[in-house]
Length: 127
Image (cartoon, rainbow, N blue to C red):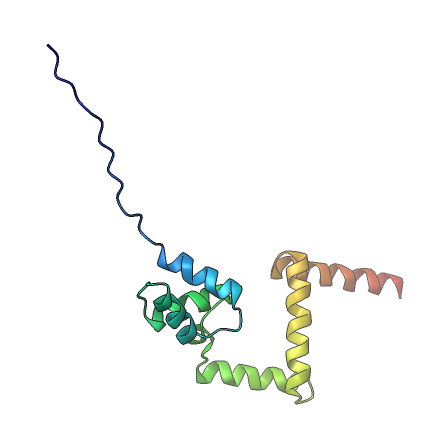
């Protein structure tokens, strides 16, 4: 006589993706802070540090403050650029935004430069 076997299915508790829960919280609370996210996760029974929440928030916002820090040489470059904009920081920031948008629409800095050079050549012929 054959031995009868039963298929026992065990349900293991599913692992909670903490990062995904934090991303969901920030999607619902875009102005929230890392500490607020940490407290909200704790209320859901999810233990995370505020540093983990801050890391997720930085990634969602496109970068971190650490990557935005500048050294002295970069500050010198910024000062030189501001001088080309009549010394007005607001004008320099607006110029950067316009240039960034132009480069983005062209697809790359090289294409943007080529487009301007072609325009310059065409304008010279027409004038």
